[in-house]
Image 1 (cartoon, helix red, strand yellow):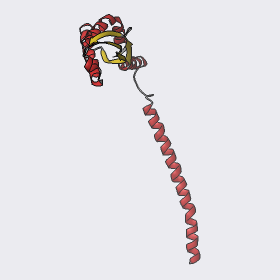
Image 2 (cartoon, helix red, strand yellow):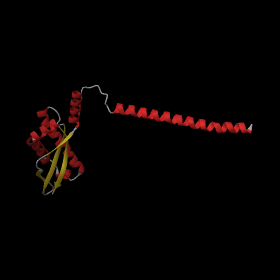
Image 3 (cartoon, helix red, strand yellow):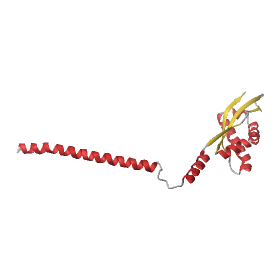
Image 4 (cartoon, helix red, strand yellow):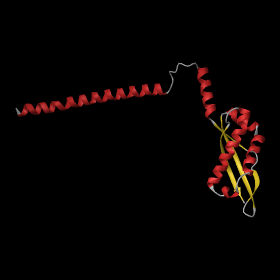
Length: 170
């Protein structure tokens, strides 16, 4: 009897190995099939949209979302009266817009934008410009002034952000 139980235990191990190898092979094939299916679905190769329409929609979406930065051609130099002395301020500005159409519109109307910015900057307070919060407030006022100025021309808010790329106050 002892010999029979040993025989059964010895014979069970090869079966377990075969079963384990069979399950491993099935699992590997299943993982490969799932990976291939996901790759085909996520690669969008099976999209039933005509090529021209797909390309036009992709161009339109990327054009609307692409940010363009228009630098003002000259830095803004102006004097601000302060506590007993006049301060000279120089600000370099760039405008952020979305899409090529708005980029072209900005470049077309640079003199109008410069006027709006200079009007906003020259009305600033020297004490406020000494702080970060004051600079942020000036940037926001300049953005609103430029957006309102271009609203009448374009019919929508063209400028998304105004960036100070240089700020010197002496």
